[in-house]
Length: 500
Image (cartoon, rainbow, N blue to C red; front, top):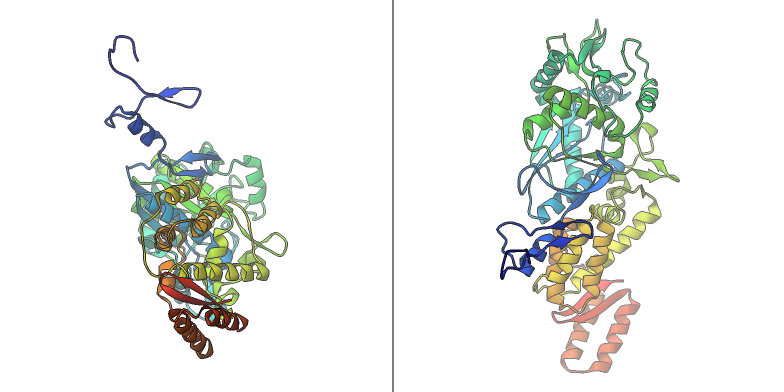
């Protein structure tokens, strides 16, 4: 009780170091105070600060999410797709927490050179030559292939797809702003960003500038003022015509790789620059350059949170990459082997997104068995849906809001199945969880397993025996079914038959 305030009790929440008053407008009851401060807040690891932080959007209950999309010169490999699964989980977690998400994903269909650091051939032009098609045809084909992969993995599509070639004007205008602020210079092959003029260039990667410069020296360009400088606009080679080129104030050419993401995120998200995602390989180069050119042009912070997914490794820890020619696609790794693509999603859920994931045939086989077992568990619950368990929902929320801790969330899922809840309540609860997991559990409930005719006859005989309370015959038939490789379970909805 404060001095001079008779008859009034003031509550405070303390962490041992400080005390905080209760929220305004929420009443001054003990319950309202604890309900506010014990709410399960979403916390995510921010690469920019190297800390797990409580997520606070710029606008209440609205989130601007930008995810780096594919360079469409070839199929996405399953290492790429692991990143898109993690980003899909993030989006689903945000929506599960009640946020309205505006999701933007770019399509790189020009400007990404084979050397990554502004040297080499455009990957689209190279793909066109490889397949005897135009660069435009290559882009169109692999965009469709990528969207097909997303659908197979039950990944929610972005609200806005934006192609680099559809936003050339916006990229040119952004370069003009940088030029007006004296951040650019011209060489014989393009317009470059001067990284020495941008303070804290390495604030995302947390590397020393000398380390970045050393890496940049792999691709030598004697005209660069600084090794880490990067191209904003590249000129078309003299004496030849590119398939993709445009007029600009500096000459005919095409945009650099990095400028597209800055131009399009500013165009489509504007004042809602909350979260930017990508693979871990984007931290030191692509995303570092995005931040530099965007903040130099606008004078404002470019995205508050940066999230990055770890690599998929094969062959004893080696990163899967197209440059290494060791990559597997969803088609040749699973679909052609008649393995449900969601097996790969299930496998990805078992490893935290910031930890490297190991790929092996044995691992996929284990995931296949694990997902089928989970599907059988869901089928055994019957078709009646009850109430979502608040207790387990809170446990699940605690797991997913702890920096998207999906292995822990999957453990909660199993706790539900092993709990004393009714089958109907179990079903309602896990279907609620599947809003985040994305394993299509509701669809599994509607599917009818193909049971061989011989097994179905025995099942029907057993059902008749049970109706006649002939328990001895019922047990005998169960054993016969078991010997033929099937299990039969008795539920409130009747017999459930599944393959071992």
